[in-house]
Amino acid sequence: MKNRKIPKTVWILGFVSLFTDFASEMLYPVTPLFLSATLGASMSLIGLIEGIAEITAGLLKGYFGFLSDKIHRRSLFVKTGYTLSAIAKPLPGFLPFIPTVISSRVIDRIGKGVRTAPRDALLAESSNDNSGAIFGFHRGMDTLGAVLGPITALILLNYFTGNYILIYFVAIIPSFFALLFAFIVKDLERVTPDIKSRVGIKIFWKEASKEYKLLLIILTAFSFVNSSDVFLILKTQNVSGSDTTALLGYIFFNIIYSASSYPIGIISDKFGKPEVFISGLVVFSLVYLGFGISTNYFINIILFGIYGIYAASTEGISKAWISDIIPSHFRGTAIGMVTTFGSFGIMLGSIFAGFLWDNFGSTVPFILSSAVSLLLAIILIFIRKSSLSGHSGQ
Image (cartoon, rainbow, N blue to C red):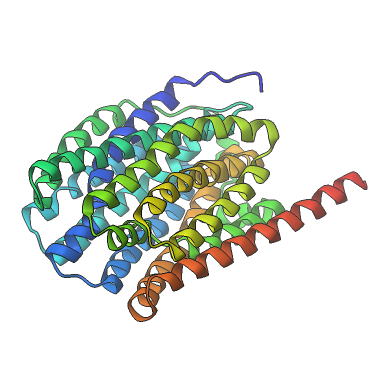
């Protein structure tokens, strides 16, 4: 790979995501603790809330990804989406009730749905032959915020024990800085009017490659067993009996995720994004197996760190993979479609995982996720071998 320079647009989007995740990740690990400890919510209800939040974002990601392709304007949706999320975050601090938490999560996810696919398309447009590095760098910046947020929450909880409401108010500060950067994001003019007129769902699906359609199926199937990370936090809390330990595990996950995203992105540009993605699925399977059988909080902390390697090997890499096999004027639609179907899977998976936990214990949902993800990795390996054999035989 010759060009590893990170463009200005990617730096700006990186800082937007850093500060947004700073705020979001102050609240993400705290919200399930707030719901269960303060508001008395069950695991099933927590799973339902997370599911509703994910499906809201997912439905909108597909639409706004398509819309950003149609008008070829990305920055408008970036600014709108981050503004909605910034407004939504502090709501439970003002009104600490379950309906407010649901409303806050839904509005925040609406913002995410509006911005995600257009932002990712803008990242793809900023890359040359280094899409893995670009998406890896962005995930690294994003996840650095996910390190700073929980650390800040942990410090606040140490001095103000059980005061979850305070954390909702403090999250306003990084949200403000996220908006400052969001409003200087500009579009890249790379698409001509005649190409714009060809954008449409039917046209996209007709022109999309077999590789993309296959990837869409695999990612959707995987999303069903990739339930919300709140279950990892709650499992660690159950094992350790400590909010602090659960948050430390989540922080460790984000540290590893942030540190490894850019290097793994570079590796994927050199050795292949499918190969890196498959490795990530295998790591996921091993981690979930570990969470399923572990009764030691120290092991759970280590598993959180390994989970960071999985995330760095799949989340940004899958988008970079899609960007490589889809032309620029369809990237918002392609990424939006994947995230829409994925959000349906995560919604159903989160609800199902909460149901299994409540009725059969915590081990069952983790073991099920481990088995299915490993099966998907094996299927992808055989598909890749078949594809490579087909090319070599031509």
